[in-house]
Length: 345
Image 1 (cartoon, rainbow, N blue to C red):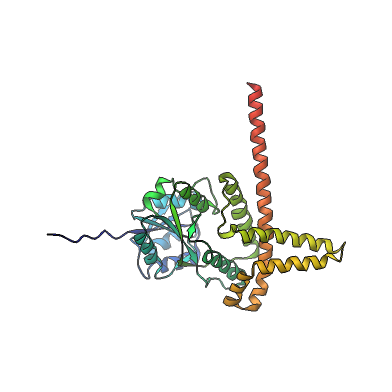
Image 2 (cartoon, rainbow, N blue to C red):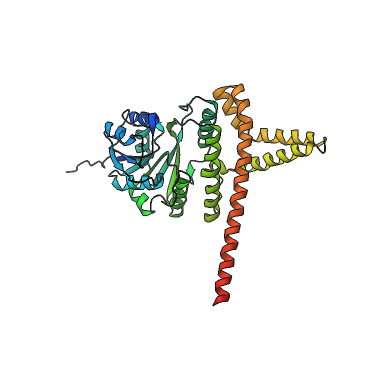
């Protein structure tokens, strides 16, 4: 006599770090009550001062309060330790989930036992309506939608990982106190341990953050480009993926060439033709990006995107150069210290 047996369904723990989440955080929690409801929601209040932890309690989440602000890496680790689910699904406090988001996360892990972690994508309808927020979040959406499904990094805004794998690699690096590249660093360690990370383009969340010029530049340069450069140099890993693909690297070179050629026009007017040629190459190289923006938001919006996009290449390239200089300076300092110790012995 035979009996049919079915494996137990995977359980999901949603972990959300929050510091003064405001209305976006309330909307985030509301979205978790649509579609497939997770087995548990764990909110780690990173010493918030606006009562975000009370909002989480209103929605029935398990709340862990930190006495001091220690950053999202530590907050996520605290939440993960309290999680009971097979899958830990990390979500930022300023995103909302679609009704099918959690169901799709479970589907991927259930159908693919070799998948250790997955990341999703922002959707193509950002919550904030101002131009910079629409541009920034749509660009993020586009980058994920055209990238390889075999990912090389993790993503804390919409990223899920098997619980045992997360603890095996040591969780997030708590040396990162600000929200920067702690998720990317975790992804590097997952890959070094031989684990597979999938970019699942159909798993999407809506980003509600309102970007302004200063906040965007500050985040891109000081919380992304500089620490990511340090991470790349430390791991000696420059993957042809996401924002580091070949097209982006060539675009950085062309953007600086364009800036130098425009500077030279005052001394050599004939350089203007050279500048136009470089601008044309830069435009053609990124034509798929601009075609995407034109389809989503029209020609006028796309025209506004181009200067911001080219500025992005300039400050990203400058940040990489600064990071490279810092790296070589620190390496030279280490060598000098070793020589001093050797001579002293």
